[in-house]
Length: 55
Image (cartoon, rainbow, N blue to C red; front, side, top):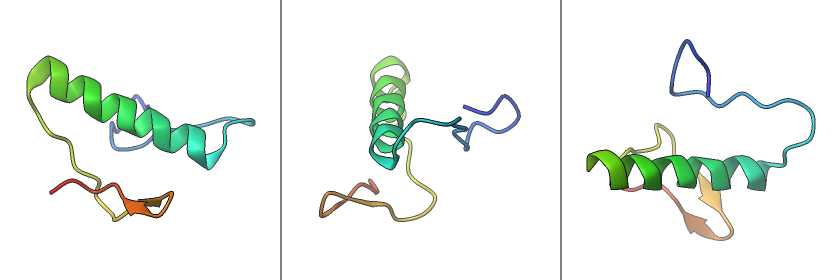
């Protein structure tokens, strides 16, 4: 994650879109577990035929 804006994930050469989306889900799940806060995506994201945005 960016040290300037937590709303961004910065990658270097190598990760796939699938890797990044799985990381996003891991971050959301961990924040929910630790703090009871449900993070939402700012934009709709489609992944493997399903929408990930939680409302």
